[in-house]
Amino acid sequence: MQNLFNLNKKIIVVTGGSGLLGSVICRALANYKATVIVADLNQDAGTELAKSICSDGFSAKYLSIDITSKASINELINSVASEYGGIDVWVNNAYPRTSDWGAKLEDIPIESWNKNVEMHLGGYFLCCQQVAQFMRYREYGNIINFASIYGMVGPDFSVYDGTNMTMPAAYSAIKGGIINFTRYLASYYGKYNVRVNSISPGGIFDNQPESFVKNYSKACVLGRMGMAYELCGPLVFLASDSSSYITGHNLVVDGGWTIV
Ligand SMILES: NC(=O)c1ccc[n+]([C@@H]2O[C@H](COP(=O)([O-])OP(=O)(O)OC[C@H]3O[C@@H](n4cnc5c(N)ncnc54)[C@H](O)[C@@H]3O)[C@@H](O)[C@H]2O)c1
Image 1 (cartoon, rainbow, N blue to C red):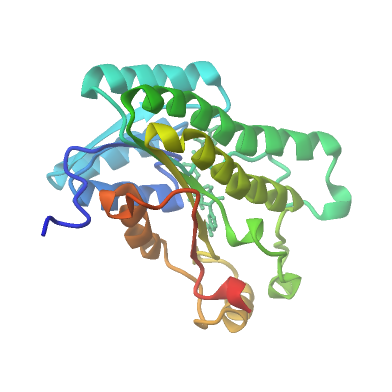
Image 2 (image 1 turned 90 degrees about the horizontal axis):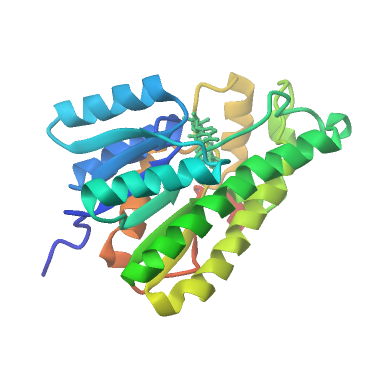
């Protein structure tokens, strides 16, 4: 039987590729023999990551992208298509947000709400719209959208007790929107052999305040936060042809957070 999770010869674009989750994912996809495009606004981190992946003997390249700009998205698509002949998988993982992200519900100006929805949900829309059109003509493609448990359930605010953290209100609308927009796209593009799935991580450990980590862990079925590397297996699965009969699905990677 062929290697189920082989990504050999696949050209994979990861937006937000140099961030917390993006960098771990880019490395994993490259380890499974994909050619990875680290697509990010952050040039220094993206270039450094691509260099480091290549020095381990794998294939990666940094390209600049601003997911809120149709021109920037198309510039990247055209550049990848002309250098590599196509794009097989596009991972929407970027996380744009305003400087007041994290304000309490009562303190959020409508302009800030709108801006976040526009940049994040709108940015994912633009990327999907542009790359799906391109994939449709090749009659092959695979889009993976990063959503979240907070696009599925309301937050348990008690986990933030004793910290100045909160779960931003717009995140629920953005991530809930991404999950259902994924279903819309899957239905729209199914006949062109373009698959579209979302992945919904739970809280990922990133040196948050101790009390938050403790509270979150207590409320989670597996009794701990997730680690960034725990998204690699699910991501490689969705990116590979092992998931060839899966589309419109929301793959939940949350240690059981949403089942109780
Ligand atoms: N970290 C978590 O606990 C967690 C949990 C659930 C879901 N998620 C989702 O996973 C994804 C990645 O999150 P993360 O924690 O790695 O975020 P992060 O902030 O560490 O990384 C986000 C990356 O996106 C890039 N970016 C921001 N705006 C951009 C734009 N306009 N165009 C292109 N790139 C842009 C940043 O430069 C950064 O490299 C996000 O969609 C997030 O909502 C994260």
